[in-house]
Length: 161
Image 1 (tube, helix red, strand yellow):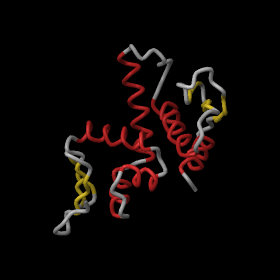
Image 2: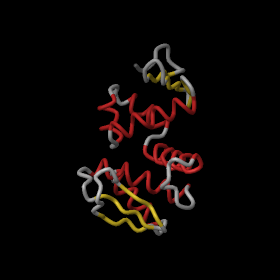
Image 3: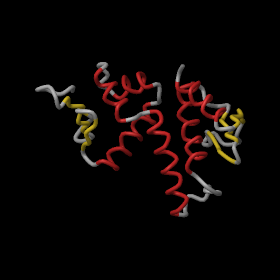
Image 4: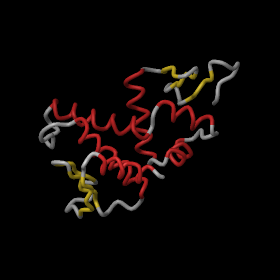
Protein backbone atom coordinates (compact mmCIF):
# COMPACT_ATOMS: atom_id res chain seq x y z
CA UNK A 1 0.00 0.00 0.00
CA UNK A 2 1.41 3.42 -0.92
CA UNK A 3 1.20 6.57 1.23
CA UNK A 4 -1.92 7.85 -0.50
CA UNK A 5 -3.80 4.60 0.07
CA UNK A 6 -2.73 4.48 3.72
CA UNK A 7 -3.86 8.07 4.28
CA UNK A 8 -7.17 7.48 2.50
CA UNK A 9 -7.72 4.49 4.82
CA UNK A 10 -6.87 6.65 7.83
CA UNK A 11 -9.28 9.35 6.67
CA UNK A 12 -12.00 6.73 6.30
CA UNK A 13 -11.31 5.35 9.80
CA UNK A 14 -11.45 8.88 11.22
CA UNK A 15 -14.74 9.60 9.46
CA UNK A 16 -13.17 12.23 7.22
CA UNK A 17 -14.56 12.46 3.70
CA UNK A 18 -12.00 13.13 0.94
CA UNK A 19 -13.51 14.99 -2.01
CA UNK A 20 -11.86 15.89 -5.32
CA UNK A 21 -12.44 19.60 -5.91
CA UNK A 22 -11.65 22.09 -8.64
CA UNK A 23 -10.41 25.21 -6.85
CA UNK A 24 -10.48 28.56 -8.64
CA UNK A 25 -6.82 29.12 -7.71
CA UNK A 26 -4.00 26.77 -8.62
CA UNK A 27 -2.31 27.85 -5.36
CA UNK A 28 -4.86 25.94 -3.29
CA UNK A 29 -4.06 22.22 -3.11
CA UNK A 30 -6.28 21.17 -0.23
CA UNK A 31 -8.67 22.42 2.41
CA UNK A 32 -10.02 20.85 5.59
CA UNK A 33 -13.39 21.79 7.10
CA UNK A 34 -15.88 19.92 9.27
CA UNK A 35 -14.62 16.35 8.73
CA UNK A 36 -14.17 16.85 5.00
CA UNK A 37 -11.02 17.37 2.95
CA UNK A 38 -11.20 18.91 -0.49
CA UNK A 39 -8.21 17.90 -2.63
CA UNK A 40 -7.45 19.84 -5.78
CA UNK A 41 -8.18 17.99 -9.00
CA UNK A 42 -5.12 19.74 -10.47
CA UNK A 43 -2.72 17.62 -8.38
CA UNK A 44 -1.10 15.36 -10.94
CA UNK A 45 0.67 12.66 -8.93
CA UNK A 46 -0.41 10.34 -6.15
CA UNK A 47 2.80 11.28 -4.33
CA UNK A 48 1.90 14.97 -4.20
CA UNK A 49 -1.70 14.13 -3.39
CA UNK A 50 -0.50 12.07 -0.40
CA UNK A 51 1.61 14.98 0.89
CA UNK A 52 -1.35 17.36 0.64
CA UNK A 53 -3.73 14.83 2.19
CA UNK A 54 -1.29 14.27 5.08
CA UNK A 55 -1.24 17.98 5.86
CA UNK A 56 -5.03 18.24 5.69
CA UNK A 57 -5.38 15.22 7.97
CA UNK A 58 -2.94 17.03 10.23
CA UNK A 59 -5.48 19.84 10.43
CA UNK A 60 -8.17 17.31 11.33
CA UNK A 61 -5.96 15.99 14.13
CA UNK A 62 -4.49 19.23 15.48
CA UNK A 63 -6.46 22.30 14.41
CA UNK A 64 -9.54 23.99 15.77
CA UNK A 65 -11.53 26.82 14.24
CA UNK A 66 -10.92 28.89 11.14
CA UNK A 67 -7.19 29.44 10.62
CA UNK A 68 -7.28 30.84 7.08
CA UNK A 69 -6.00 34.25 8.24
CA UNK A 70 -2.28 33.51 8.44
CA UNK A 71 -1.46 37.04 9.62
CA UNK A 72 -2.65 35.82 13.03
CA UNK A 73 0.20 34.22 15.05
CA UNK A 74 -2.09 31.64 16.68
CA UNK A 75 -3.28 30.52 13.26
CA UNK A 76 0.31 30.19 12.00
CA UNK A 77 1.11 28.00 15.01
CA UNK A 78 -1.83 25.73 14.23
CA UNK A 79 -0.70 25.55 10.60
CA UNK A 80 2.81 24.57 11.75
CA UNK A 81 1.38 21.87 14.06
CA UNK A 82 -0.64 20.37 11.19
CA UNK A 83 2.41 20.33 8.93
CA UNK A 84 4.56 18.74 11.62
CA UNK A 85 1.91 16.06 12.09
CA UNK A 86 2.11 15.38 8.34
CA UNK A 87 5.93 15.30 8.35
CA UNK A 88 6.10 12.82 11.21
CA UNK A 89 3.35 10.70 9.65
CA UNK A 90 5.15 10.33 6.31
CA UNK A 91 8.82 10.81 7.31
CA UNK A 92 9.74 9.67 10.81
CA UNK A 93 13.28 9.90 12.10
CA UNK A 94 13.51 6.12 11.75
CA UNK A 95 12.38 6.45 8.13
CA UNK A 96 15.33 8.77 7.53
CA UNK A 97 17.67 6.16 9.03
CA UNK A 98 16.13 3.33 6.98
CA UNK A 99 16.34 5.39 3.82
CA UNK A 100 20.03 6.08 4.39
CA UNK A 101 20.68 2.42 5.19
CA UNK A 102 18.98 1.54 1.88
CA UNK A 103 21.60 3.57 0.03
CA UNK A 104 19.56 6.69 -0.68
CA UNK A 105 21.78 9.73 -0.20
CA UNK A 106 20.34 12.44 -2.43
CA UNK A 107 17.15 14.36 -1.74
CA UNK A 108 15.66 12.94 -4.94
CA UNK A 109 16.50 9.32 -4.03
CA UNK A 110 15.22 9.76 -0.49
CA UNK A 111 11.96 11.33 -1.67
CA UNK A 112 11.44 8.52 -4.17
CA UNK A 113 12.11 5.88 -1.51
CA UNK A 114 9.75 7.56 0.97
CA UNK A 115 7.05 8.24 -1.67
CA UNK A 116 6.95 11.97 -0.91
CA UNK A 117 7.79 15.03 -2.98
CA UNK A 118 11.25 16.55 -2.73
CA UNK A 119 9.70 19.79 -1.46
CA UNK A 120 7.82 17.93 1.30
CA UNK A 121 11.00 16.06 2.31
CA UNK A 122 13.06 19.26 2.32
CA UNK A 123 10.47 21.06 4.46
CA UNK A 124 10.33 18.09 6.87
CA UNK A 125 14.12 18.04 7.23
CA UNK A 126 14.14 21.79 7.89
CA UNK A 127 11.44 21.36 10.54
CA UNK A 128 13.38 18.53 12.20
CA UNK A 129 16.51 20.72 12.17
CA UNK A 130 14.50 23.51 13.75
CA UNK A 131 13.20 21.16 16.45
CA UNK A 132 16.34 19.13 17.21
CA UNK A 133 19.17 21.49 16.24
CA UNK A 134 22.17 20.23 14.30
CA UNK A 135 21.56 16.57 15.15
CA UNK A 136 19.52 14.02 17.10
CA UNK A 137 19.98 10.39 18.10
CA UNK A 138 17.51 7.55 17.68
CA UNK A 139 18.08 3.79 18.03
CA UNK A 140 21.89 3.99 18.03
CA UNK A 141 21.94 6.29 15.01
CA UNK A 142 22.77 9.97 14.99
CA UNK A 143 21.08 12.01 12.29
CA UNK A 144 23.01 15.17 11.42
CA UNK A 145 20.98 17.92 9.81
CA UNK A 146 23.97 20.26 9.42
CA UNK A 147 26.17 20.96 7.60
CA UNK A 148 24.39 18.42 5.39
CA UNK A 149 22.14 15.45 6.05
CA UNK A 150 24.10 12.46 7.31
CA UNK A 151 23.25 9.36 9.32
CA UNK A 152 25.92 7.91 11.57
CA UNK A 153 25.73 4.38 13.01
CA UNK A 154 26.91 4.80 16.60
CA UNK A 155 27.68 1.06 16.90
CA UNK A 156 30.08 0.93 13.97
CA UNK A 157 33.30 2.79 13.43
CA UNK A 158 32.02 4.68 10.43
CA UNK A 159 28.77 6.36 9.64
CA UNK A 160 26.47 5.99 6.68
CA UNK A 161 27.19 8.96 4.49
